Length: 77
Image (tube, rainbow, N blue to C red):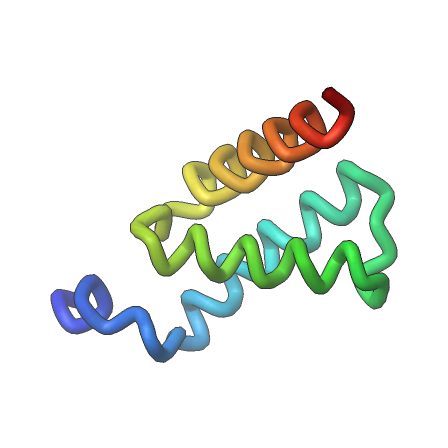
């Protein structure tokens, strides 16, 4: 378990499952095609946020949603 905290270069199957569930939920929420370029950008974001400490699924989902809302807000200013 401690190794998981310090080694973010490799994701375990459990880590990938968490990221995949969050990715799928955000795609569903935003009506994104999982094969679309926007979804690819989302996938990169999910993994990056996961690697930067949000390993709890609920916290990861909240962080991704928050970041996407901020990005959408700044994009229209």
